[in-house]
Length: 498
Ligand SMILES: [Cu+2]
Image (cartoon, rainbow, N blue to C red; front, side):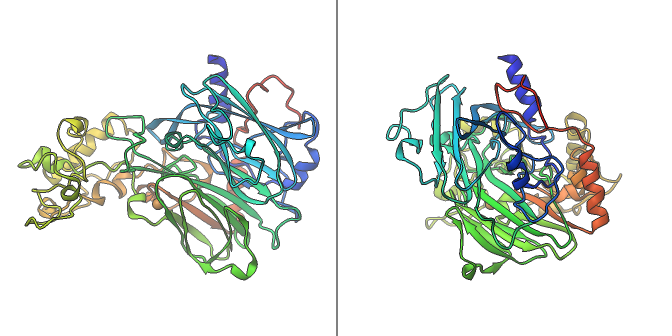
């Protein structure tokens, strides 16, 4: 068991899987026969067929042809996911990854998915939006018995749909622990116009209270927001060549809707969780609201060179590790304990005073008493600018040794900052002192402006629209990296033909 776990960790990589060069899906299809695990053709260049999807930081799920069906194997299991350097959390996912590996098929395919449950509790797998027989729908209790711990269920169906779909556990709390994966159905014939690049981004959110490594799946103060299981700046930018037509498929499974915004370009929304939309409906925009349980496809021509931000525009989703503002409680003259939800959220009921004043909070609707003991040593305030500098220095000593420090004597805030109500806000959450360019170094980040990482948080990444020479250079750097493509569980010893 341990060996298998280790294998999964290494092979699927804890979020370390970098996307490979763009591949031609149609070519790979022709090669994928018998026991050939290489459903993705290596190094094939786009030449008018269907471009394989790329899910940065998430592996593709290989398959083999068995009895006329493409057979996939998913193992539901606990995983340790590194959201960003130094922040490893306990999630539940598939095949060592949360979200799970991306499944890619073609309209009309017969598919079989073996689902093993290695979780300590029952699970089921739902194929979100699939028009399949009800017995294959994965609704626990109604369409099938839940898959017991240690149990297995084999799903099999023929797919007549096309579009951006996903799979997820149909146990609600398990959804909030990471149990989601993309299921892309390419159309037959291919979409017109064809996309040169086809990216997938899965949106998830976790509430990890201070001094914890396991999300509280009941809490609704989400403080870790992820693209493909990574928070900025650990997300991997989408690298495209100037002039390419780009599709981005965005999938959301969480408690919040996410307005995903792209800088520097105007896209059209070409599809939803129901598949491709007619061209007459392709409205232009730069922000697409991806609601819970929805997917949205956007397409644009990358005609504007630069490193363009792609991010959720909810301000709280552009942050990392938010925690309750307990600074006033622990460091000043104290504040009310255990205030009500209404008062704690600043909703006054005729009581005088400022909504977020000392009398009422900000406790964010949570009692600040016994139940929040672990919050209290984790103030996000500082007594003085000098104290703030000392705190940051000690953080560097402790765990952030790779973090780039400020220039000596340089501060990001004025001497009287602590007299400003609400301070500190972004001063401790983003800025040069939070830069960690070296810690998140990878080919896709090559050439970004020094210090860029100090301002990338939460659901944020770049679409890097690069001139040919820079594009080729980064792709060459990527091709020199070790092959991290995954195999299916149980297939470790089979010959790896190519
Ligand atoms: Cu959001």
